Image 1: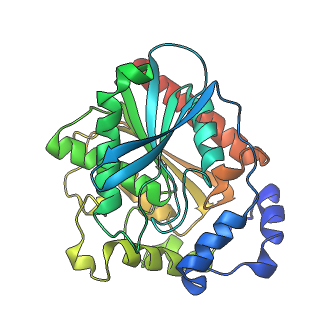
Image 2 (image 1 turned 45 degrees about the horizontal axis):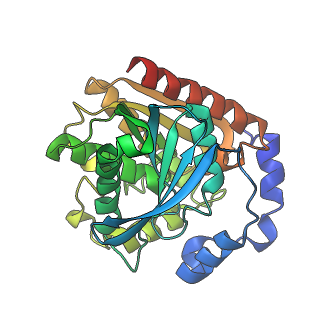
Image 3 (image 1 turned 30 degrees about the horizontal axis):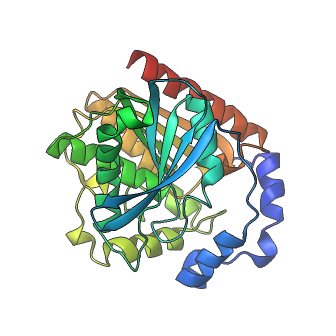
Length: 309
């Protein structure tokens, strides 16, 4: 097995003594553990604005990051990770800032409702709504309505992929690209990466199954492609896609297979696997060299997509 990057190994060594998998800790303890982690400042922005809009399931908080003072910037609707069970715009503030800086784009981070209090399709509905809201309010936000993308990490990438599918099927704001960062794209627990990294690091196969059951329910036969994008039989007509995976991650193989299916369907797709890193590694791009290199490459691709389509 490929060795972990030294920065990653050193970080993991500081977590082992008190680390408890989410599915063993339970919802409230997992949320408290994430909220208790030190929050490092991300890149400075020209402005950061919190808004609450009238969403499909009630008030929906958004945080809008503008990296520079310039008109007609491209924009990304970003959905944070956490299995749709933990996380918020606060806990993922650093990654939203890094994406805004790397893409030179406005980032709208969505504080969608979490399971198990709010099960499918609540967060999925809020993801689709957020993209349409941004399109409708582009002028007010100083955003170019022809240059809008979606992005997410982990379960947030599933929301991004589901929103792209829903826009293709039901209409809405056309997307320049979708960015999936270590996406938990399916429920398949037989993939080699799931078996190899069943005990982590960072996240376990049990955590993936637990969070998906909390949001989607226990019966995979009832799943819909908007909630489990890998179930979509036809992936043609979707926007250009950037797939980012980590070598030491249970979600790796499912996300990469989705990328290969997109390519086979004629969608321009980049599949980028980063060696020696684990789930969530981009959150540490401020202090891990390999994560910084990855963010620079991903940023270059995003800027190229926004410039050339």
